[in-house]
Length: 182
Length: 250
Figure 1 (cartoon, rainbow over the protein chains, first blue to last red):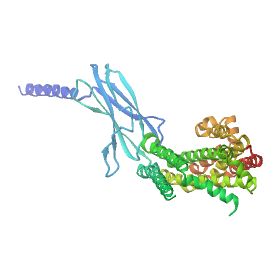
Figure 2 (spheres, chains in turn cyan, blue):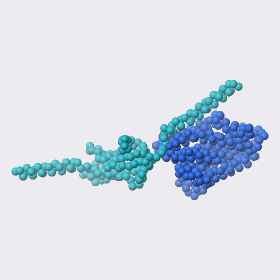
Figure 3 (cartoon, rainbow over the protein chains, first blue to last red):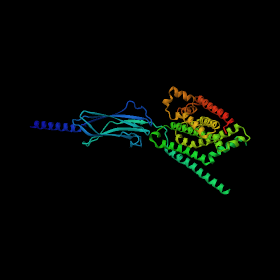
Figure 4 (cartoon, each protein chain N blue to C red):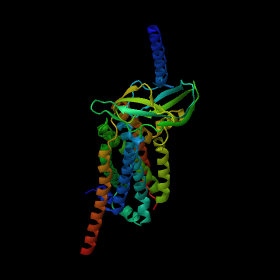
């Protein structure tokens, strides 16, 4: 009788563990790699490209797939997510359908706007599921270079024409005064 | 005071005292303001290297200076003729060269004012980068003979044709041809014909020097050949102007 109890316990445990493991297994495989042609030491203004591969490892089709790229600055004391507004025009793919075993390879171009250390990651979710899957991260460093400082340009761009206009007004007033004297 | 200084004083006063001269300066500063604001506000352009931006601005200043020289030079003789003041000038007790020198000095002072107006813009876009001092030095060294050369050429045509419009059209057409390297990419200029045109074009010579010293930080020794080109351009235009000014069309 005791042997039967142990046997039953073992069977139930095995069944439970198998089902938990199956539920935990992601139906998606995600990979993210930098392009081979990316500069080894990129500088501000350079273009980088990353390649993601999303594969449906499950048995059912995945519909309404959404994948998006995120960038995080990881400079010490300045850790923050980056608004991709100026960095990339290609921020997401939406509505794709993946059949079981089918891979989806996507490139993510990016223009380097600011110097610093960054980490990039691609996240994926689908219409039906409630989970978000993330790729491995790729880290890179962007070297600083001297570029235009808008704070210095604005006063000059507005000030010099205003100075000339003031000179014109002053000249005109002087001419009128002289005419008045004559 | 020597006669040519009197003429030079009168000509240069037009730049700072007359509304016409100030209007030109306002247009010039407006052009540089628009250019620098475009550079600062456009994400793509704002990522250009400082040296590249200074190089582009030097080319713009040079083109505007040469255009001013074409306008003032075209007006020098033909304008006096159209206003009916050329004959009294020619009857005045002074040599033909004094009139030409006075007009050229007036043009030189106008170019100096333009240079002074351009300086804060060059500082604003290039102070955090490299070779700003070299950019200013070479803009003066190469820009002055190129600008004066166009001025002399316009004066030669103005004295010979007696028509402001005719002289202006001819000089501006030549200027547009000479300034084409500003628009044509380095790839096209790298062809045999492009290189041949660069070798004889003083405007391209000045631009290549700006590129060489501002972006590539090359020494003066590398610029000597191009300096000879712009000096030769100035000499040839001066000769043409002297010949035409000796027998102006009045």
